[in-house]
Amino acid sequence: MTQPFDVQKIRKDFPNLSVKIHGQPLVYLDNAATTMKPQSVIDATIHHYSAETSNIHRGVHYLSEKATAEYEKTREKIRVFLNASKSSEIIFTKGTTDAINLVMHSYGRAFLQKGDEVIISAMEHHSNIVPWQILKEEIGIVLKVIPINDAGEFSVANFEKLVTFKTKFVSLVYISNSLGTINPIPEIIKIAHRENIPVLVDAAQTINHLPVDVQKLDCDFLAFSAHKLYGPSGVGVLYGKADLLNKMPPYQGGGDMIASVTFEKTTYNVLPYKFEAGTPNIAGVIAFAAAIDYVNSIGFENIMRHEQELLDYGTKILNNITGLRMIGTAKHKTAILSFVLPNIHAHDLGTLIDEDGIAIRTGHHCTQPVMKHFGVPATSRASLAFYNTKEELDLLAAAIQKAIKVFTKNL
Amino acid sequence: MSENSRAELYQQVILEHHHKPRNFSELKDATHDAEGYNPLCGDHLHIYLHVDDKDVIDNVSFNGDGCAISRASASMMTVALKGKSVPEAKALFEEFHQLVLGHLKPETTPNHLGKLAIFSGIWQYPSRVKCASLCWHTMKGALEKTKTVSTE
Image (cartoon, rainbow over all chains, first blue to last red; front, side):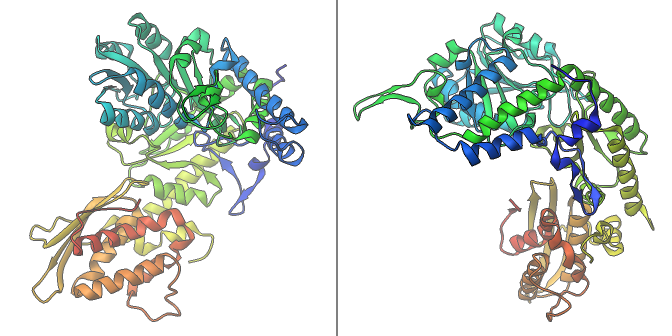
């Protein structure tokens, strides 16, 4: 059941939000890098290590069966969260990067050939560029890139122009981490499927901002990380359609992913275990369930409404700062405010406002092609979560003004 | 430099060099040059040196884009290097390197840093040490004929 939205009450659930940095209350605006964890996630982690430590899928003793049950409960919770049809379509990984690499190594190496075209966009995170470049070097696939406009958007039409009979895979970011753009992924998937081209969706920045229904979206693969959804780091999810996952070869070999091993032949385990070699981040996966429960208790309706208010307010007050240029002004965007100042490099700004307890990300955000498109070496990025407030955005704006003063005095 | 004041990191000297960098140009007759990148920041510097037949750096310049720390550091480095012999430049590199890591305390250890001692507090900002040292690594790379230097 969702409760009435009370941001001050919500903030109390996140102990890390109440720390002081350089004597100032923390203003945490780096949520696209990672999100804070609610107490329930911290408690679940501690509980596992304090009372229920065990490996999974192996022992017959009580603790092992308990840990296995808890681990699998998270899988089922994620299935419901994504509205996947089967829990075996939920594969645990180390994170989004690992999930994309899994698809590249397994699907890419088995089903793509020299000359086959893979389409990505100009706003991909490096984690959805470099794996495909590795495959390009290995087997000679052709990488095609959907261009972006100066608002930081790509169009369905520009995607369609790139599709040819050689296009065999599409791998696209749903929401850009450096621009906040929400891409027209549902339309792209429809077009790709008309040509029987599978689509991977990088949902690292989507999963905490929008409800995702993989059946409605009809994506073939979807990747995200727990730590950007208020859960632990070192845990990610690859959703894949069972028919595709079944025909894919394993990603890594080892324990848990086998049915039987002899020196002559190994039979692989069924889904999802075929793709889960070795002991995973058990405590992390188990605690991730608490994060999903927490997000469900707030509800996406509340999250989206509050974050939209923050985005509108933040855009307005940052645009009031003389000379500030917003990078990423898409019509459909989420609560990410990326900007540059005329005379202050992003890293200098980041260092200066850190003194006021304000945490933003400065740099290229692992999207160097985006920086190149906008002709900037780096941006400053304030990325918001449902626990942020308008007062924090006021503090950000004031700190930026103060930094401008430091930089322009005696000029 | 005190523990807590970020504004002090951006002391007047650093901001002044940032706004009006010295020797900010390409050196057409450079005998040594190299490019330096800091992938974290996107900082990019090109260092040019002219070394005469007596092994003395008689001219030095730089250009490129970067944050205030990297640009000011490069500007101040060019001022410090002009007229130094190559061995002296390499020795100064070592001193600067120890300085920004916080190992060399200019107030207690004899050194040749002069105005460069202003960077003594930067070790408190680990992510910014590379900004200050990029130009020095690039300069050393140029003298050793390494064309591209990366801080990563």
